[in-house]
Image 1: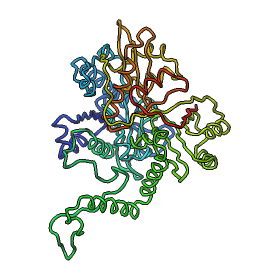
Image 2 (image 1 turned 90 degrees about the vertical axis):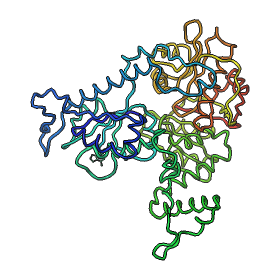
Image 3 (image 1 turned 120 degrees about the vertical axis):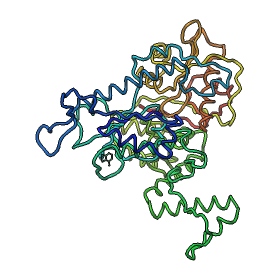
Image 4 (image 1 turned 60 degrees about the vertical axis):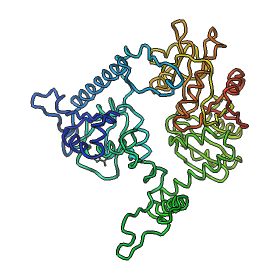
Length: 499
Ligand code: ADE
């Protein structure tokens, strides 16, 4: 993970992050920190970076030019570093590729330099979305993060529109500048980066990991100011200790942070409804498990989720009344509404309410085993690069747009096999997490390429502790046969994607 901080006070950030765990992580090379002085990029001969706001008002604003140029310079350096890493073959690759005895060759990747990668530029501002543990976990998956720290009264809006991808606040109070908030976020994101924390510092059981506050902890002496350590902690009975700790966490959260407690039990309620038919609901269970969905409503007889990466509303209800109640929670003004629903009455209601009628009917197939499938055919599987997008777009005839395919490639979620000097087969992961987009050129079929690709995707997901699943369009018999061969189980219920 490489952090890049655009600031007027670089020492404040570099010194603030040079000690303790983050200092150690930087020295070990687990994280990299680049601080960039915005003032170095001003074209003003007096090194000025601020000016009065048009229309009057108190204070000064940071000007667009130095901020823009500082950011452009960072992006350029990132692109060069990535190209060099690719050329040297030192970029991160999934160990699964090697374990499967396959060789990863990111052909063509080295001349991708001109194609600047999709980079997150985070403007830290009290006007942003409030930073959470979930956001830290999500941001920790990026390879590079650029933070923009404001000062004075703010920054010229035009440069923000031009470069910023995320507006993030650390809370509802105002600080004198963005450096402390950026440092807070960097600290919390770094803890999620593999290798940063030692085992004993592991983030596993701490506050917020499962949406609950941490249980109380005690150390020697056993009796202090007449206060004994709770006897159960001295019992040596691990199961009872774990149970006690969970109860304490729940009770503490209920008392101190009732809104977190409500959200925690909502997730529990959702999982309990969805688990009544796990195969049919694996899409919804997995977006919850993978921490990418918000549980908007969870009732005895229905669940409504909002999946953040795909922007899809996911619904299941056991009766029409509940279905209507869940649907009434969805804001109508959003223009690109996308739904994944599990009952045909929901499909019909959505068509009526939201005037949507582009429906794909699917069967869900789930890989329920813990071990990867055994696949006899071995091929060289490589990640796709943006130059592959046209080949993919031409041969993949399902509903997806070229932009979507390009986004999936850039996200590092599309893989392919070459034959006779061209892309012969490909597959990937959709933004909500299902495996899909599998296609083998007609001339290359029946050689096991589709099977190898899907086995590869399954292995990759199992390594992350996920349950792999895919959604097969109604009528796609070859795909259904493949799912059966690889050992996936078909869900009894249907699933409808509505856009
Ligand atoms: N800049 C000033 N106050 C801030 C806050 N609360 N969060 C993020 N950036 C800020």
